[in-house]
Length: 110
Image (cartoon, rainbow, N blue to C red; front, side, top):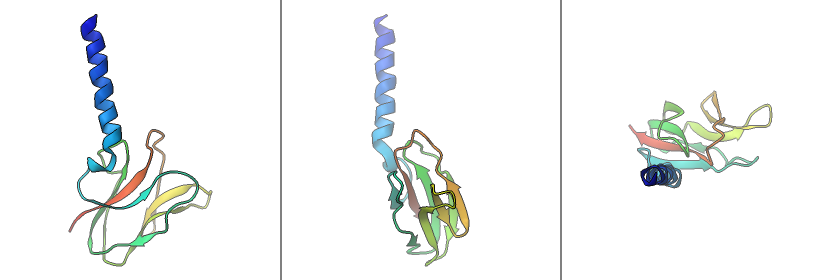
């Protein structure tokens, strides 16, 4: 019985570490973050031609990846229905991960 409690404790610590780790788990440099709410940060332009990836705070897997040329716009904005979406060029990506506390774009390299 004690080992079951120990196992449950280890699982809890592992999940907590993943939640706290946030954007540090994924490769690249964070360029813009949306931390929830109804207002999104203003869009930004790619500082250089490179691959950019969108992540949810509770996942190490990219939700969307795109190669942007320097000066192309991406980030977060309001959709026609009033919800906040991520976008790159003309593509909108819904932010539907209910367990995520934030979403962020990372520049992953050329």
